[in-house]
Image: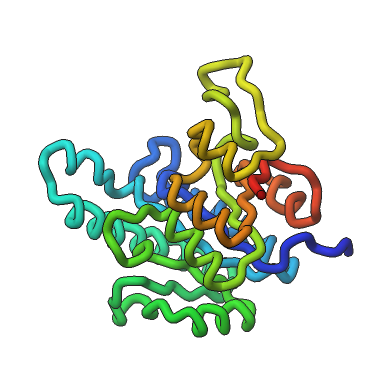
Length: 238
């Protein structure tokens, strides 16, 4: 077997990934499909951590447009990410993958509190760790939570899972002439305002020299190919 390019990864999923065709709610079939991808990676000997968003359950922007307090909207989003994390944990464990949900907001009855050294120990024991509740603070996105947790657990890459095969200069679904980038620098992403991750997350990755790989998780071969060192998706580095 070829030498793996990455031995420890953090997979960033949007909440919509669990939402099925509508993008809303939790579709058990979608959770199982994602779990099967993660299982394949874990069986290769790769340590896998996951951060998942909440867009399938709660859109804080809608609340803000009606005058909702920003902190309240963000905390609601954090709670929704824990629901998604539990759904993914269930799908993984039904496929025989030992999983732990760790929450940045303490809720001991349903998830472990996030402790960095404990998270690393879980990974060393071959468990998948799903991080819920973002950073535990309002005003920070799950993109930033992904960059932060990846840095803390010494992940070698943040893999941003999307439904397109990389980063384009415009929306490829609307513009058939959209150009795909094979590689970008952090500064290019910021200057071009490309929607890879938010600027706080990009800056955190840049400061810690943490690569970001954007790929199509729904391409059955993309993730495995990336781990084997093949040129897949778009790589954001220094």
